[in-house]
Image 1 (cartoon, rainbow, N blue to C red):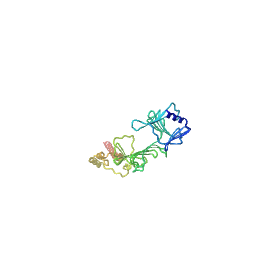
Image 2 (image 1 turned 45 degrees about the vertical axis):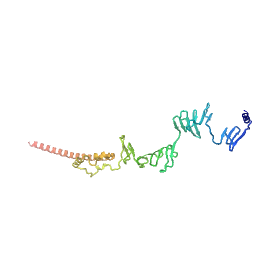
Image 3 (image 1 turned 60 degrees about the vertical axis):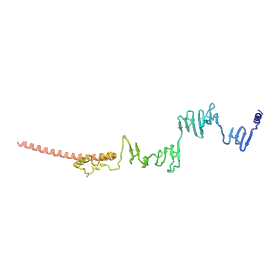
Image 4 (image 1 turned 180 degrees about the horizontal axis):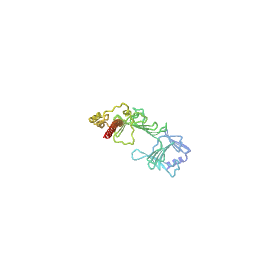
Length: 326
């Protein structure tokens, strides 16, 4: 008991400032109630200059926000050989630095930029994930981004891979652009941009647009479709000097080919499909030619009716003259 009594007596009689030196730079200082380990000027009740080792660490008390009771947080390594550091607390875990905040509440909800998450993950602010800033083939950042442009304030969503018209998705409200890029076997399946750039073709329900700007593998429905042709509209049929195919020649052609002149045959339509714009143009031409045929027949019928009326008047006059003689 005598050694312990002497140690207690020594601690009671220590001055306001004391120092123990064990070896080298390993020192313990007590200065005006502050304990310093590895430092001669502790600035807090316990100031450690160097590494520490403990099985667990627990803090009780509060930092403000009208804390009631004795909330606590503990930091330690689980003893099940899984190398997991566990930070436990009640009613939640909160990290703050300046204006940034991260909160994990007792319900398991994680809040980033907010301390009141009401879902499994709530982010108050922009989200950006830079996957590779130095892609060797393209001078474009590979990223997933969702947020507001720092230059224009526009809302932007970008998912970019091997991009500048490679793989990826870019919805950019800043310039009114919509880039949806998908490559398949070296061919760009879908690529469109609202500024008119011919970036590629659109394929829906198929991976091969066959060179068309829009290819749909399946049925389509629409309330209205507008087709603008670059070719000449067939109003030239009504121009002076347009020559119609004689009806006798038209009849021979139909008997021989089973379709009208200028229109594709059934076999060609089965193999290549129907070009709606061109088909409407050809059908309009045939309707206009049919109108001319009808007008020609109307003129012939009118001439025949006029001649028949004249003949009837002549016959009636002769009959009347003959009855007078008798």
